[in-house]
Image (cartoon, rainbow, N blue to C red):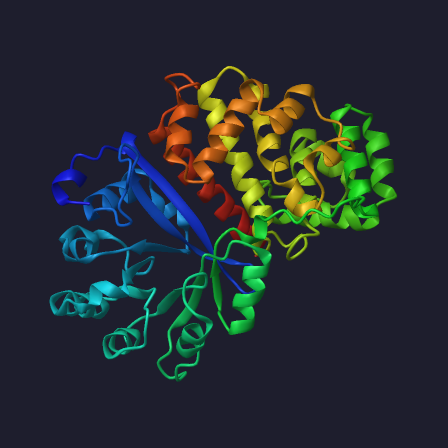
Length: 419
């Protein structure tokens, strides 16, 4: 992207993309952030420095990401721009495509930024030549495409001497099989949404723990008597322990310790209890109910919060729509958690018709919100613009970026409290 073009890029044209980067335990270490101009049919991989710096400031991304890293793809024009030194050296990592390093002036600029405390990542080197080795000695990370590089090349980089080998990130990790392969090769970090890949098992039935959880969710949805809900929890001891652990650790904003289901219902309220129970459907996937090490649970919470925020702006007087949007966002990822088709799951979960229609056919106001969210999550700019056209003037691309930053901050706060 040329500097003259980038200076005209307004925040309402900015498309903010992100991919999580996880460690071997499933804990989030950062996001690769992509800043694109939504008006371009073919967009560059590297956003201009002034666009990135403006977005960091206006979206408060440094606060949203908390202690996690922001990985930014950086070409020569980006790295030579003096504005990038307003970014936090403790938070950003500049990803330099290996092909750019043939420029001696750029190499000198990178070394200067390293001296000033900035971290670098060598991205997609095709071979272990002298230039790559020189840069690797100065880099904190290296990022390798497991879909494009031959296995012998990957192994060559991963077997570098430990005294200077940077931390290795596998990217394009799209499936569970990709993750298993990258882990076997020796990668330490993994970029992608492999953990959200639905692995559907035909004829699979819900396990007893999930059945008990859904039974209680249905009781709350039916506005059952509190005594009946408490009694249902008494038959699900493990679920009670999980609920109390989760509500005490992540985000209820209370100064008191919740020690019983009755207290949880009275203090937190049924709506929040229902949210935590929905989240616990993800506890059998990944790291159980440890929120900070369960990326699928975090993604479900992020999607729910994002849709809730959008609904609040789209129809500010309709509080019920916002609450339902949160549940739709979370429930849309249940096939990945339970290994069952969504239709089969919804046969057993008692939810309102608008939620069911949104999840199955993307109909109604909730369905429009879900379609918009999925296009945005999939970095489908054309689809996002089409879906935005159906939402009315109160929802814009700029608003979506702000809601995403706010939602990331909210989930980060939950994860931090859960540690």
